[in-house]
Amino acid sequence: MQSGRFRQWLAEQGCGFRELGPSGQSASVEVRHGNRRAVLAPQHAGEPVEESVVLQTVKALGLRCSDLPGRWEHFPHGADIGVRGIGYTLARAFAEAARAMTAAAVDPDEIRPASAVDVSCEGRNPEDLLYAWLNAVVYEMAVRRMLFGKFEVEIEGGTLRAVARGEPVSQSRHEPAVEIKGATMTALSVRRENDEWIAQCVVDV
Image 1: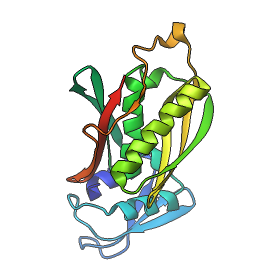
Image 2: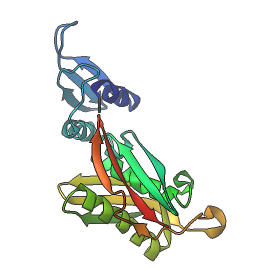
Image 3: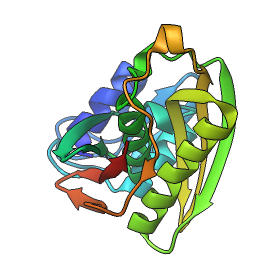
Image 4: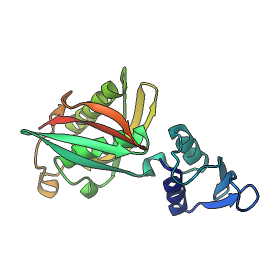
């Protein structure tokens, strides 16, 4: 995530800033959110901020990593659907990939976050972890007969822990367009492009 974008996002969350050095010179910046504080090292607006620094800063300020910027999209693949999550952290990209999978059936923004379900899985590498994660979500949707529209994801090494929020499926209100059967290894990819993570695969419907 570029330094300028990160500071803009922090400002949108209600954070205040104070330079810790002479005016006009490159200096560290103190960030405050309520009674919490963090310090950012000097950086130009276009320079990338390390993902570990983003996560440490967000947590130190008492903000939620799940609120970091992210988006999802679909890509065509025959009779199935390609799902792609994009985010400034790996965890955010995984959360958005799950939202893209939900969106293959229903609008995730129309799902009420009435219930929370814990989900965890492991993977040998990022691609293996994405495959395990999306199929864990499919499993929870199937056995609980629920739809999930919001995901709070944390990744540490090869372990993913998440909270999926949603509600029981209603055929009349949600009108699912397809049945999501599972994630596949087709077009499976987790990669970093510029300052964003991209996590994608094809979903069997």
